[in-house]
Image (cartoon, rainbow, N blue to C red; front, side):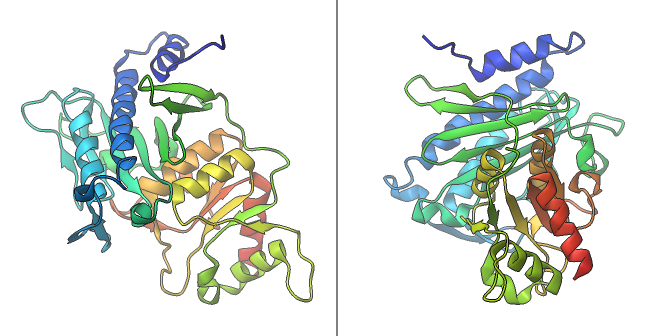
Length: 335
């Protein structure tokens, strides 16, 4: 029988490699995995249980319509994490301000930042969606979390990960010690099992690019020329790349991580600062991408070097194989 490694066992094994570890950080990751199991169960019932489908009628801080499953995933993440004593605060893509830890619970030395349900506009049409999370160490004095604790550069992340709810549910994470590992949920036993150890972006990568080409006319000339360079035009053969775009960030990045290529969400005329959230989307996925041997950029600078100006700061995003991200940067500068 093939050796089975649960996510709990894997976290413990990783902890043993670092004798100074207290175990608190490992426990935090267990709680994230538990929340992912609960959200996965509900996502998989979305076509059968009517009261978890559709919109709530509200809009979030991003100005987006809130889905019922958005609310559910948000509540699950908060309730799974607020009582453990590991966190000083949380921040969510769905909330305008810091989420404090209730006074009745002990506070800890970590900050959790998360997007509870990325791609939720795809829920009603059964397209893969996901959860993204990131962990920082508290840097301010006192027990309560502050903006200083939350607004840290991506390089200071202790861990980052995502869960993709697709044909199977898979959790992928990395820590400051490196290594990217993927776990697939076995619903028959309710456990995440190690299925993709030590993920590395393939070299050479697949000739695949991922971008919403419906916005082509809004892009800078440099961005347009780069995509034309990849796919070719009527007059030029290009590099023979194929376009693959799902429209769910977690899913598009997951494919890029496993097969190589490049994912792009460039700035455009209507979103000159970019569209994706730095804290909840770009920085966590950038940490994973770099740990797997790839690169992450805003088109000019490494994503992990950016210091967010606010909880909901946005950024352009280029993720994937190092050579392709560098090619995109060169094209943007030349254009």
